[in-house]
Image: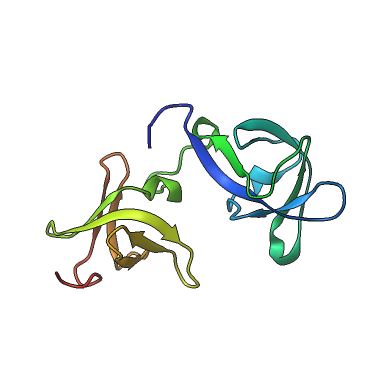
Length: 159
């Protein structure tokens, strides 16, 4: 993360077409329903476009139509500055990417490479291949400004 005000945050990708008027499913959509409503502007591969129609499709996935062309797979982003600040003790998932993770006691486990959605809970995938459940029993603290996640011993295999 750059920390700059012009940092872009991924909120989804242009998915398969829906209907004949240029609408499409949003793949990997942000869980914030306010991101995909009529009148909202998004950056499509860096180009600002406005949502002219929005609804929910199969499985509750967002279906949107833009006021311009968008290629399948194009990134849908918003400036970080447009997101509301998370509540105290909360964070955005994208803020975890790249953070170092260590066990309580100081043993380094790696850096967060991805946050995978799970059936019961999300999972932190580290660049070392370690998978950690994103639950209170495992994750003891998340310090985004201090750039550190501390987890309980026993969730990662010993060296």
